[in-house]
Image 1 (spheres, rainbow, N blue to C red):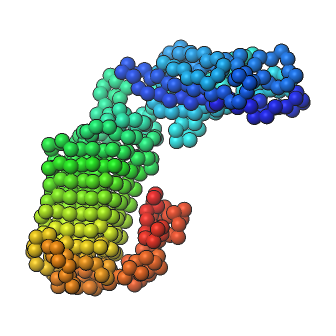
Image 2 (spheres, one colour; image 1 turned 90 degrees about the horizontal axis):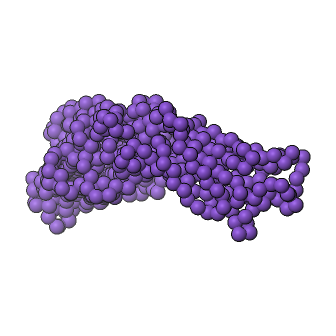
Image 3 (cartoon, rainbow, N blue to C red; image 1 turned 135 degrees about the vertical axis):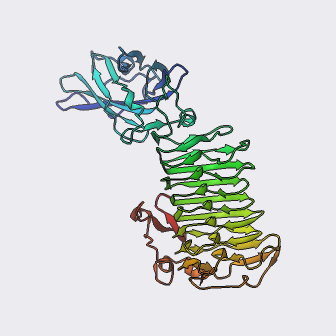
Length: 500
C-alpha cells in the first residue's frame, strides 16, 4: 500500500513522503519453485497519480516510480520482476522463494536537497524481523532484494526448525523424500507451525513414532478428519516419543472402529511429551480412546479437551489408558465422555500410574468402573491426587457392575492411592435412566473414591482452589501472571491454562 503520509513544501528537514508495503505470499509449485504474489495498492490521489508535493517540478509522479523485487537464491543470479506503481495491482513472481508470507515495508523520503531516500524492513508471518532483505533506491527505481538462503525454510534443527505453513507442508512432516524440497523432513527432525492451517478431506496420520519436536507455536490446525482408517493408533500423529507442544486442534472429527485413538496422537510413549496442547471436537473409536492421546506411557501436561469422546472400554477425556509410566498433569476436560463398556473417566479411562492436578466437568457414562476423573485405579502404586470432579452426571447405562461408580474414581482396590481429591456435592448418579439418591457405597473423603464434598459456590471461588481445604493449587489472578511453569489462572469462574 502506498500512502501519502503528509504533504510538505520543500524545506531543510528530511521529509517522509510515502510508504510502500509489499506483501509476499508464496505457495509451492511441483518443481521446487515458489510463486510469490506481490501486491501494491496506491493510496488516495487524483486518478491514482500522486505528486511529491504542490509546486514541486522535475520529479516524477509516484505512478512513474518502479518497484523491483529481486529474489537471489544461493547459487543463482536471481529472478527479477519490475512493477510500475500505476494503481492497485498484483504481480506474480517466480523464483526459489522460501515458503511463507513476508511483509516488506519501504519508506521513501524526499530530502532537503530534493534527492530521494528509501529504507525499510521485512518481517515474517510471526512478526520476526528478517535479515535477508535489502532496499536500495535509484533515480526512480526502488529495489527490494531478498537473499533467499536455504535455511530460511528451516534446517530441521532445534535452532532452525522446518517451517510448516500450509496443508501440503503439514502432510510432509515425517514423510520427507530425498531429492525434493522436503528432504530431511524425517520423524526425528524439528518443526514449527508458522500459521493456522485448515485441513481438507481425510487426514492420513503421520506414520511411525515421532521422535523430534513439533512446536505448534500457539497456532491451530482445523478440520482434522479421520473416518476411513483401518489401523490402530490414529490421530494427527500415529505415535509420539518426542515433543509435541503449543498446538491447538479445532473442528476435529475422528469416527472409526479402531483402538488407541487420540486427537494429538494414538500413543505417547518412551520419553514423549505432549504439552500446552488442546483439542476441540468429536473423537470416537473402540478401546483406549482419549481426547488428547489414546495410550499414554509418558507425560501429558497442561492440556485440555472440549467435546465428546466415545468408544467401548478405556475411554478418557484426556487419555484412554494412562499406562505404567504415564503422567497426566495440569489437564482438564469439558463435554461428554462415554463408553458402551467399562473403565470410563473424565480425565483417564484406566489409570495405571499418576493423575494429578486435573479437573473435569464432563458428563461421564458407561457400564462399570466409571468416575469423574478416572474409571479405575487398581493398584496401590497408582495415584490420583489433588483432582477435582465437577461433573454434572455419572451414568450407569446398563445397570452394570455394582459399586464401581464414583465421583472421582470408579473402580478401586483397598489401599489405592487417592489423595486430596474432591467431588461436586450434588453430582447426579444415574442408573439406567433413573436418578439415584446417592452414589453406591459413597465415600466422600479426600482419600475416598468420591472425594470430599465441594459445593458449586466453593468451586466458583478461586480462593477455595488455592486453600488447604481445596486442592491447594496455585491459581493466578489473570493470564498475564500465569506461565508454562505455573499454568493455572482464574477466568470465567474456573481455572484455565496459561495459553488460553
